[in-house]
Image 1 (cartoon, helix red, strand yellow):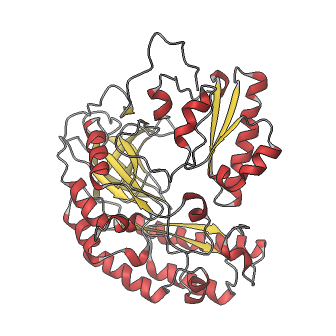
Image 2: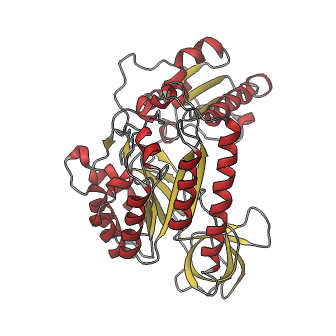
Image 3: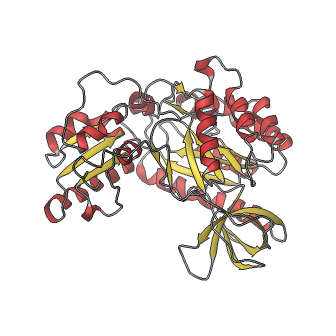
Length: 452
């Protein structure tokens, strides 16, 4: 989007208005593939009933099924793989990209970018690719080997985002805890977080990172999070299972007892930390005993947030060739039971918050009802966790992007409800545009560019 906007193209969220339609896809698991294909076919209809002249498919589905898309989807006019993003402008403008073999893609602080999030929070990808051999995962096949962005590139982008009014930055990558290893930086993520926390901003800022690998969570990293107010007390650490046998077949290692010790160390180092994880149920060879062990582990660990995924048997993954496949009904029942167990854990933890006053980042009016506002606590990452609902406020009316304190009055399974206290900071002042690092627009003497 940044490259297209930098060339003067107009972006539109309405497919019926677009001259060129670009579908960015995922192929990690079957539901993602289905959603991607359904969206491609849906967008193809706009070539018949709208003004669209071209349909372009981008992303991981291209990497995995490039030949199939070309053979079986004549509606698609062009494809863009994960390392071919620089070709998007030429394809949208009717030209052809260079035939040179694309190099592993990794954007930097000078890459044109458009924020697709609300302007008070943003994501920064600090690395691309993955070197872990997890047998259920196909990401390394399509994203390539792990590679980190340069340290100052990330810092420069973060500083610019904060300057434009962003209040929360979320660092992402396939494994953020490996950041800097390929650059020879020891404890690279801890060093990066320390540097980001020291960026001077006129108002309070939040910085969090997602997707920690358990054996990469060092004491240095924990001490760094504990030592800076700007680093939210939140650890997202997908464990995938607790049974040593299942984890061995997943090629991840570890075990429930080791994880409990790690969780205890995290909580001891970072008082009040919120911990999120995710698990896969129905992995090949997972026995009833393995699953019961996982249930006991979840009860003991008392995670703040937890996601459960049904195993997806991907034909290019190493686990596809394992024996002991678990039937679909059993997988479905195990997922439901584990989520029900976590629901009780989460409800109890939320009830413990009633009566407390905690900081929240105000998001805006609730999408569910005009009677409520929505916000997020430190322990609620955007889109994946619960929310803090605001049913009353003191002082000035809430404004999106404010960080204010919330007095919690009610607790639900995943959400909390409360009264927003009077603000103690000035109203947010944002840069006038939601664009970041946009290069000069196209020459005004050239023909107008199509809407995309």
